[in-house]
Image (cartoon, rainbow, N blue to C red; front, side):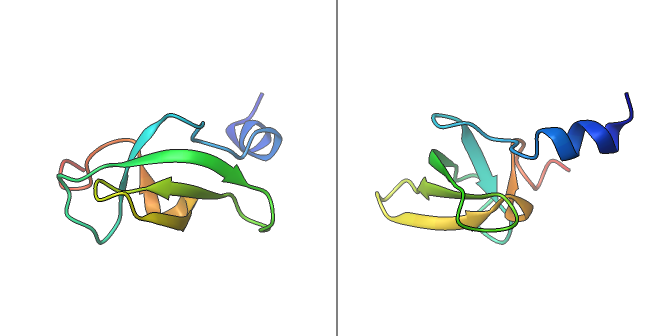
Length: 70
């Protein structure tokens, strides 16, 4: 099965409870994924930062690895 087919079949990369890093934020700080938001055409998530603030963030802005390590 091609990678494109797999991505189209399961576009979500993060599950509730996962930790992620956000592009453009401090590369040492992580967010916690609270839920997947299905109101957008591209996967978006509701996440909470280390200060307790909630954010709606596109999957394009998230990484499972620190972005300074890439």
